[in-house]
Image 1 (tube, rainbow, N blue to C red):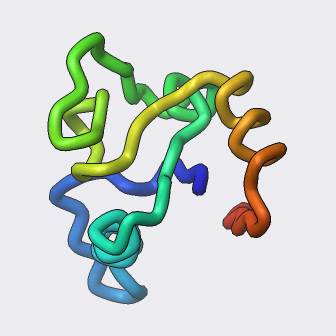
Image 2 (image 1 turned 90 degrees about the horizontal axis):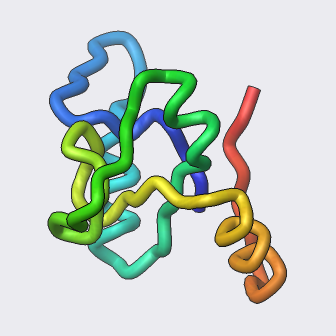
Length: 86
């Protein structure tokens, strides 16, 4: 899964907390990845060390910024893909 709205400490009051939804999915073993270009456009920077499955200190555990190449490989190998976009 690719997403860019999984920042820690977000607590929206008028709509569903996407961070909680993504955390629940990650805890169940869903692979969640964020596009490197989309993440950097929003100021999220990947780091070398992966902490609790994440390589961005602003992201929730289990969500990792990755390359477009890795995302295309995931799409190719997946039997199901969910894309959330506007």
